[in-house]
Length: 106
Image (tube, rainbow, N blue to C red; front, side):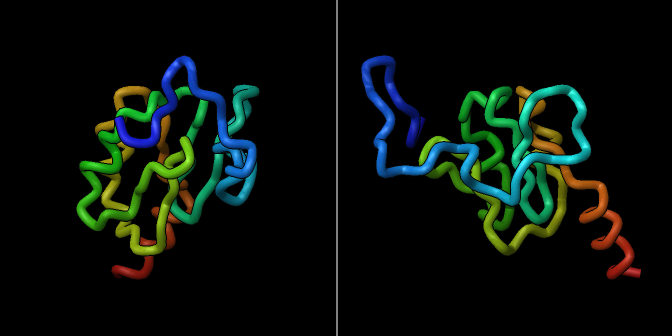
């Protein structure tokens, strides 16, 4: 697994933690677990085991694993493959982004 820490490694204090990425805590989730919102997806760093399936399945290369966090880059086409294939249920499409994308296509 690229970017994963082994049991003996300590996090680099100069690298922001996973929760420092994204736009903040999701307002759609009321389960007491922090989700990180990006433009099109919410990512749960607690559920995620950093298996890279979402990174590998993304047809546009939008998702990357960097500094122990899944990062959404700018070219997401909202296909939903990352959400569908995540074995940990750690990625969800943001409903407002999906609705806005669908409205543009009409």
